[in-house]
Image (cartoon, rainbow, N blue to C red; front, side, top):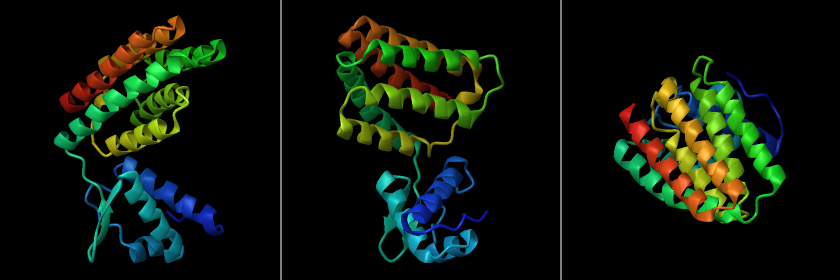
Length: 216
């Protein structure tokens, strides 16, 4: 698939989106070499935006770079996944705690809208990309309410890395229902102004997702 031609930063972003999509969809499996000349030829663009896009993938943790060898799609095994979620559990709990003091009624209404959309899709056929994206949208919304930029950036990188772990978690109805139930607990605690409860709910959700990912 070719990337639409554009200029400078716009072209680099288009290439980056394309490569991210191919990694997330499994079209470029973990360990796949990220050859700048090869990708540039396939995407029908110059090498410069491809080189910059690959460098960004390394920054995001989606690719590893070895001197004199080059970059390849990062590999995330079960051991590394545990480490990612151990950190995410702590940081998501902190984000929820900090968000509690900042949320408005409108913010809470927005979070309930997201949860209800997820609930409404429970009777629909599973869609891994859709359900994963909705989950990420929910967590991004909660984290942004913390007002803590470095914390949000760290959590986004952790979520991005977790995408590398191939799992059919979202194919199971029980897993989808559990995720929505846990999201409801987080929002209920935020709505009640219960910082301790919001932190515990967010931590428990991250811990539960890890178990379900490994179980799948």
